[in-house]
Image (cartoon, rainbow, N blue to C red):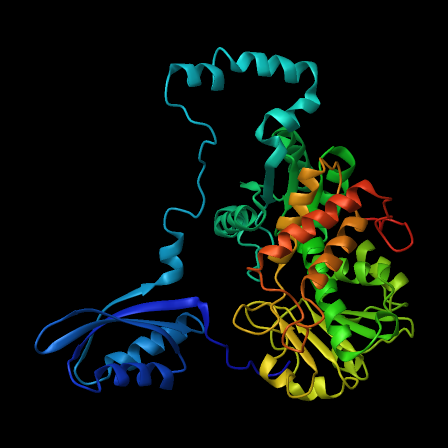
Length: 480
């Protein structure tokens, strides 16, 4: 392990600091200089009040983490003539009262409308659905509603923090569904981490939903939960940590290879992290015909001859690492064309990236701190991507899941298939035109309105076409 690098300021640790400062020509400059010297980034300065002697300023700035935020405030407090009146954490302010709500789609202005939306008129609709259950997709919210299901066992990079602490993430996911895909999604946060119980609960609530989005459930249980639910339900089950990540990585890699002039069938890829995301990435890359993949995790490279492997890791051993490399991550990187990290922060240095092949590609996706400092990586790699919104080439699942579900719901699909994943990845990649591609632009912006529409169209087409097996050789890895 290398020493931790300095974390980068981001909007995730944004503060608004209200200060009173003696009104002179250099007042604002002294404030912004102090923030900069403390390592913060000033994003806004707003004068909110003043008198003959003082000016009151709201100073908004990005910091790296909570201790860094405290350091920035302390630097301001040390300035002569400055009185720090209030410090507001803008992230906590945004979450006050939650981030989503339910709103009716129909007006209920009078007795006539009430009689049709509710009793007695609603009874006729109930009887129609009882006679033909498929009508629920047409006559209820099922046609456009997704359950975002978690047990809180693997939330972001925070680990097993439980259902209550998982709620802000699930609310955010639901908001993204609506904002980017027009999909009504709702958090279903379960106070159990028992596999059989989770499956039973989701199966029981499924009639109300047109799709299930599994989120932040720890491996290897997430594999079994998804596989069994897919077998038992007649609506798509999609584990975003696996398939959403894999789709976005394949899309980004497709364009990165275009930029550096390499073919996917000729490249060697090293993946750090053989959990849910890493496993799905590798499976999709194998389906796309990647030259070779080496999977690494805490024990090092997964290779033939290892003992005590989980079924998921055994599957990877059987299908990756052609030369049976048995060393550590750093050794695996030597001569590799592509590094994909979905693991832990600060595992590598710029010197490690320097050992890769010429025109190398680095996707360091651990959040909030990547596997390698992107500034160091860019000194040696041709293309660098992270999961951070404040760095070029952000690989973010929001590029995939809203459009994927939009397409599946529109097609009234009954399952999610690998054909849909490949189609979605190609649609995301193609949204960046050939004339726009460069080392700093290999994926579209998450705010590009064309993305979800293109992905939805590709998924709808895939839903109507021939379906591929779910793994490269048609096998399903046995799960525990």
